[in-house]
Every structure is written in structure tokens, then in C-alpha cells.
Image (cartoon, rainbow, N blue to C red; front, side, top):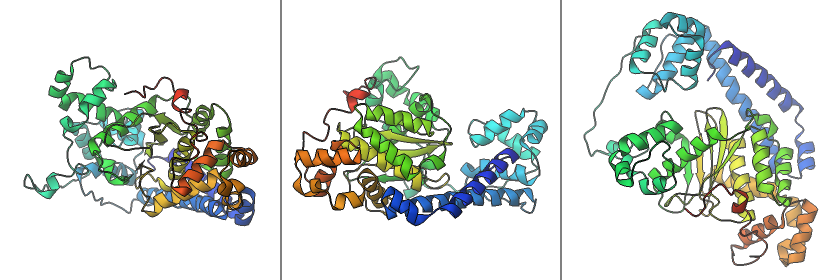
Length: 431
């Protein structure tokens, strides 16, 4: 959402550059250059999708600025912050102007709006609404306790004692808490609440914007705990630049994959992602989550979370590329913001199937794979020869063969067992 003139001008310039890129995009040349018509089309569609999203934001801001809109609808209190922002724009007030009306600095209004008023008190919200001359009516409907509305975690208040407290305590996730396990259980409504809020000011609101690929029954409290941990660690990740979606071309992705040929490829990959504005965070899975990885957007920061539950090079690179495809083509702020993946489970929806297909295509182009001797001979020499020709780690070739054959007992010596976790020595994988 665009909230001020500076953002409007920046967004308008971005749209101009995107349209120029789309106009100059040569589908056939790109397909020939990267060796895949599928990836070339996906790259063009990603540019068009990004342009459409930004254009809709520009149109909304322009419509609000015109002063034509005077009525705003919110289906719940969770949507009130958006109403306040839109009402300010429709009133012709800048963030500085609103700040002057309520006795706050412009920077404070900017912070409120960037976090959707998550840290504002009820009294402050009322002051803002009054300053905007905004009349708010709300209908409150009470559902009987025990009704269907009272049960789903995705829609109702969190029950703090249902989080995997023992595991979170053992991993030292509760910073500043020095009490015993018993004290944690007794004070879960405060300690766990603070942990969740430190990761997300409104932890339950975005759950309808997530997808979970799973083959087993997942403990959604454990999933939320792991997500919060990833979010917290991502904000502490050093040297992450401002995100630039335009950098993530097929050529950039292929350059990333070529890092796999280096001994410290995973470490180099993390640095390359940070330079593009993506935080890569490693955290072992919690029990009953069955996670390999996740892709999410927090504010303007794209995050890839990986568990490394399988300590193999082939698994690392496939999971990394799968989540990168989600970030590049599937995640959209305000729509789909979180995807959690158990890649042992069948990808049944279109998004997961596309991520599987494109990740495989990026790692080993179809044109190369269709005629590769290694695909049929499956010998060490043929695998290493193909890996050398493609400039990638032989573990990726071996992993593809095992995956296609659905046989994970073959080529054990080539998939890089034990070669990933040791590159992240600060992480305790023994938990």
C-alpha cells in the first residue's frame, strides 16, 4: 500500500522500468539464452504480475487523493488500520499534517502506518480517527462458546500453553526469561505472548495468507512457533540489502546454482541472497512440523527459512531453489505471504507443482537432462561428467536421479551426506 508522495513517485518509476523491460523482453532470445522456454515465459509473467500489482497500488492512491472516496469498509477491527491510512489520504493530509493535528512527529506517523498501527494504543487510534473526522460504526457478534467459530487456530485467539514450550525452552528461544520450565508454563500467557508479538505484531491476521504443503498431520502451534523464530532471526541477519526483485532473473538464479560446485556453496549462496535483499535463515524443525523450508514476506523483507532436516547437498539446493521460486513468482503482499513446505509430500496445487518443475529445470535444464547419459547409465563417471559440463555439484545430478526413480537407496555416496550442517556451526542441530 502506498502511503505518501515519495512512495508514489518511487512506485511510478518502478512501473515505468518494468514496462520498459516487458516491452524489450524477447521471449525467444531469452529461451535460447537460458535453455528453457518454460523459464523464459515464467520470467516474463513475473514481470507482468509485478507491474499489475504496482499499477493497482498507484490507482488506489490516485483515487484516494482525488477525494472522491469518502466511505471505507472494514470487515473487522483488524482492517481498521488500513481504513485510517486511506482516510488520511482521502482527506488530503500528509503524514506530517496528520502528525501536527494529533501532536506527533511525522516520523511517528510513518512508523505507525508502516506497521499498520500495530503498536498504537486504543486511545491513540481514537485520536487519529477523531483528527480525520472519521465516523466508525461496528457491529459485534458473539458466537456461543464451543461453536465452530471458536475452534480453528487460524481464526481465533491463540492458546499460549499449546505451543511446544519444552522444546522452545530447551532451544533458548525466550530471550530475557531466566525462570524454570514450571515457571514458563505458569507464565506462558505472558512469556510466549511476548515471543510471538516480537516476531509479528498481529500473529493471527496473516494466517489466511499462507499455504502449507504437508503429508502428515501438522501441529500448527509448532508451525507458528517455528515461523516466529525464523522472523526474529531474519531481522537480526546482517548485511541484507534492500530487496530488488528485478535482480532475480533466470541468469541470476543459474549463477546462484553454480555456487554449488564450491565446497562452501551454501555459505556463498546465503551471501548472494543477502546482496539481493533476501534473508536465508536456518533453524531445525520443531516436532510435528515435518518442514524442509518456507518462503515468506515480512514487511519488505523476503525470507527463506530452511530446516536442513536432511543433511544432504542435493536436498539443500533443491529446497533453496524451490523456495526462491515461491518468492520470485508466487508471494504477493496482502495476498499470499507465507508458504511452508514438506517436500516429501506430493505437491497437489498449481503453485507447488510449478515450484517443483521450475526448481528442477533451473538445477538441470530439460534440454541437457533429456539427452544426458547420466540419466540412464547412473554411473559415478557419467554423473560427474555431466556435473562438470553444467558447472554444478554432482550431488544435484545424483539427487535428480534418485528423485525421478523414487529410490533413495541408490547413489548414497554422491548426494553429499553430512556436507551442509557443518557449514553452519553456530546452529545446534542436536536439539
